[in-house]
Image 1 (tube, one colour):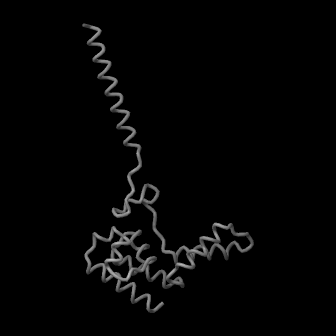
Image 2 (image 1 turned 90 degrees about the horizontal axis):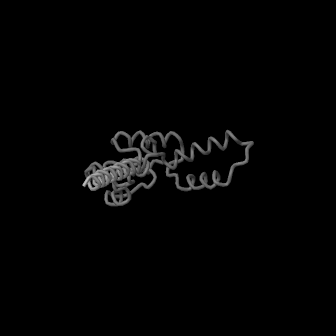
Length: 154
């Protein structure tokens, strides 16, 4: 009888141990990423997303600063890419676009995505950037109209 009681205590303790270990493993698992909910992962929690145009400006500045140094192939490919897909070419326009989009109280990811993708309709914007579903169609149309009018003057 004592052996049976000891076995049940041992089984209980083993069960508690496995439950505790499983809970610790779950606590250490990274949060699941979901761009539609703006869950971009731990590395991006406090990061500021950049427009392709901002990246192009930064890389051009570095290229000018380090003229004497040979640029690595990945640097050159990245610079070529952001220059090709930059919608806004001069620094003052890039700053104006960011400031204009920040007035709409969008998240950093949404600002960069809208400026980089330049959707032409609310439906296109929401299909490309699912987190925009939390805004009304009127708000999104105002953002798109502002982007479109700015693009005309570029």
